[in-house]
Amino acid sequence: MKIRASLPDQGRDLRLDLFRGLANWLIFFGHIPHSLLAWLTIRNYGFSDGADLFVFISGYTATLVYARMMLERGFIVGATRLWKRVWQIYVAQLLLFLFYTASIHYAAQGFDIPSLMHQFNVAGLMDQPVEILTQAIVLRFKPVNLDVLPLYIVLMASFPFVLWLMLRQPDAVMLASFVLYIAARHYHWDLTSYPTGVWYFDPFTWQFLFMLGAWLVLGGARRLEAIAHARWALWLCIAFLVFAFAMTLSGPVPALRALFPDALRAAFIPNDKTYLAPYRVAHLAALIVLVVHFMPKEWRGLEWSGFAPLIKCGQHSLEVFCVGVYLSFVAHFILITFSDSVPMQLAVGAGGLAIMVAVAWYRAWSKDVDRPVPRLAPAPAAVKALIPPPPWRPISERRRRRHEFAERLKLQRAAAEGSAVRRPRE
Image (tube, rainbow, N blue to C red; front, side):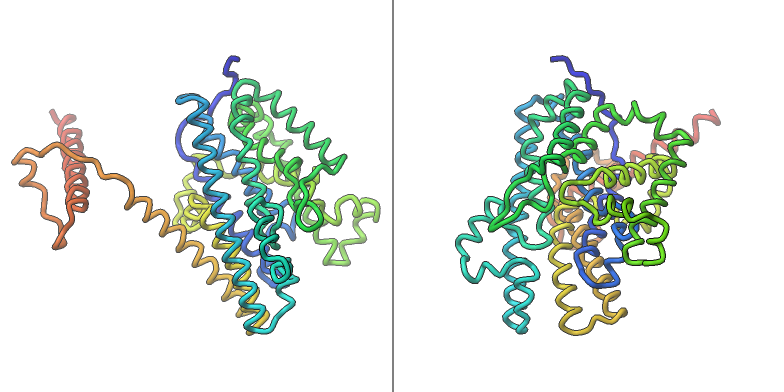
């Protein structure tokens, strides 16, 4: 089958990192119930929230990375690298489950708050620990707030085969994804949870957001570019966002209910998150159009230092996500145990974000340390004499080579700049 997909130009799009980091922050705030912090999420001002953004960007970035790998190195290499990532996410889910449930049990027993066990859906651990752990391993048992990663695992595990087809027939696969989304919503197809119920994020409907991100990478964005940049599309999206803002706030603000008939409000409230209501997809699409208009890929504002924490969190989203979910429970526990005053809420929120950013920076530093240092050919004596000794003693061989490599690059740049300055005069 002929390859029909077209990949975008190489180069990192910082907007993806920025908004994936923002999604992690929004998920952290949204998981702290009955607090001022929950009002800092977009779910209170529109139909979609951080989870929608996270799944969409995950599909987009996974396709950016693995589609090119599959084209250049073959299906086997691309598929095995994808499944390696699935294994990493699965291990992260299990470790998060262990730390999360152990902390809830310790807090409930140590501080005599038995309601925590029921509030976070882990009360069954006391009666059937082996059965609960077994169901957690197969992703059927999930405490409250641990629903996103199982969805991500299922979508990524099946993605190698879908990506192989999508590289050849992107439009047909996207159409099949849409048909599956409509059928799953109509018939309420879902996976079962333990001991009862279904998955909070239905994989058969939420796959549509994941696949939409993949389709945009493989040529869909280029075909929709003219529409996304049209002025009528911008005003239509703004109008829909204003409508979503008023409709969502009509729940907590009674004065806004008079703007909408009861039949119209019943179509949007309560917000259908499990089966991914179409208006959630439309709301996210409207936000994407605004980003395309006002924040192009080459926008210089992305280099602003104020965005650096968000971008760094987006570049290491798995670690930051797991830490954020765990910290959301810690923040909730602090607020119900010690004080839920506004200053305390702001303090635990700021502290949680600081820890998430610190984890992201540490992961970036750790990867840089683990990156192999290039071995250079011995430098001529004249060049070696120009390289100053490193400013520390003693020094490892690894640091010596890194220092010499950096200094030789500086000398090469200086020589190149000097020749460029002299050339016009000659």
